[in-house]
Length: 201
Picture 1 (cartoon, rainbow, N blue to C red):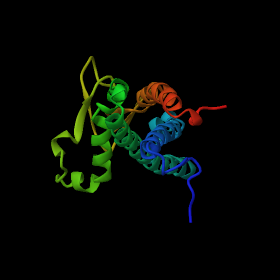
Picture 2: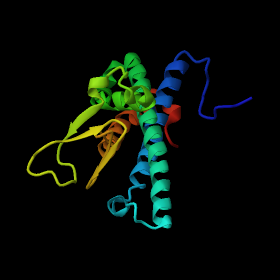
Picture 3: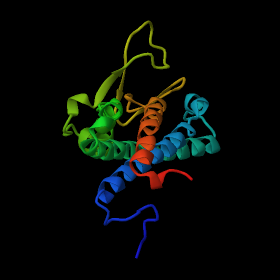
């Protein structure tokens, strides 16, 4: 039998609402943890220097990086999608949170990129639900593109351009984390006011 140590009392009148609210906050915090894992994985110098002539050790490190990148980016998208799911639920209960929640949840890129990566096998053979959106245009990517010309990136790829870490060329990890921090700055005080027993003592 498992026990959830943060669950207060499921029999309270608003216990279900509090539990959903707490889960939304947990996913926000979890997404920040996972997002920092993604950002800490960046090895741009390796990406630029690896080639068929690279040493076996260099290739091995590069391959390991690619594995961790694939997994951590996917888990980040899943976590961010859960933020949207649970915050939308919280918004239905407490409409005063609508502006703060909508500021984060209105961006469809997280949902679309998560779905495309989850069903990447279908998109690779041209049968994805949003196939025409699988490849997107990206401005100011860090390659030799003259002037203000656009580059392209499919949803399975990643672009690192200075501080910008773009999953699928469209989900900016750093900006997503900043928006979640802003959301938490609204949701946590609201929770402590609504359910005083959750506030630190």
